[in-house]
Length: 258
Image (cartoon, rainbow, N blue to C red; front, side, top):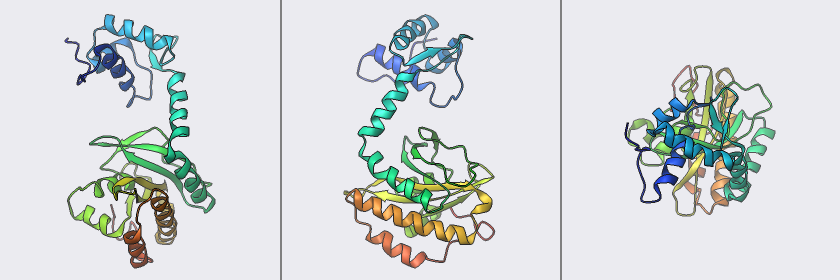
């Protein structure tokens, strides 16, 4: 098997290969065997062992007693450092805490990761029971769930569904990722008018009735408008859409919105 390590960059081959090992864990919540890592990265086991030894020395990879490998504590520390340094953290987290205090379902903030996935950057649990297994750092599909649909809509995705989201500045989803969960999301924009991410709330589907959807939509839209202003964006179109849409949100019994 050739040593390809996915798509090589114009940088250092050894670094590319080491990073491909770390990337192999993105969609795997469980530790991986050496054979599984070899299959995922396209690297020979002998090469893997040499690279893993260096990654282990710096805490990027750990080896379990059963011989399987998993991500090490250094990555957690780097993630925490990234969040502390990120202006997103300082601006988004107070908004999430306020939504929880207002009694919404669990709020989160998502950004585009690649052509098919979104990254949940921040997430807080609501004061209610939660069913959706979403946490900060998770990669989720773009084509399922309200937050993903918002990101697609304001990234130029074509279609009637996305036209409607662009018109309303909101998406509501029922059971798209999990049949028992629902979600609601609004876009957040920056100074250049481009999308920064999607502000979302999600929770048990039975709590997304007409009354709660209308109430949470108002709160999430207000929060998204505030964040857009904080990032230097112009929320006038969002404010206009909010006035038009008050009291007009669909329930899952009548229509499955995005």
